[in-house]
Image: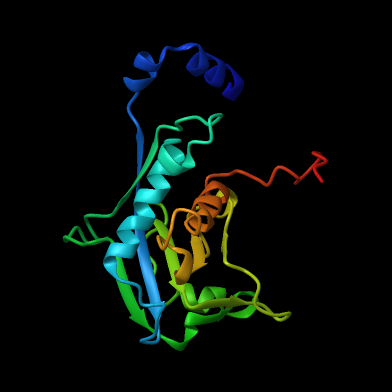
Length: 191
């Protein structure tokens, strides 16, 4: 079915494709900070969401000539889980901003989480480490975790919206969140 859908979309003219309604996915960004540089300004968060939209629309910096407009758009949530107004940006002061993701992932997410059946939760921290060191800029759970208490994306705040290139981290992780694997995963050989 997916292949039939892709073929039918590819056969449409750009005008016809433009008539398709986009999928609009609400995002909430939780900034876990300890009053340091990881407490990025709202403008940087807004820029990060803009970069996500441009990448998934294959526009501007992200248009490498062979991409495709996915018709997926991301917006910061305008309503919180109780129906009240929100900017879609939350700030929580915690030492868990220096995160060991092998042992502290759930504890950090338990600080604040909006219903993952209604929002894409993105947590920004100062540093992501594991028991072997600190070399992870971000990580996401695949759709199999959807709705669970680990569902979402975690990344180092320094990358989110700081530049087109650095925003590749949230773009990459959003791809995983939506079910995309690395090209070298599984049976594909890729050196």
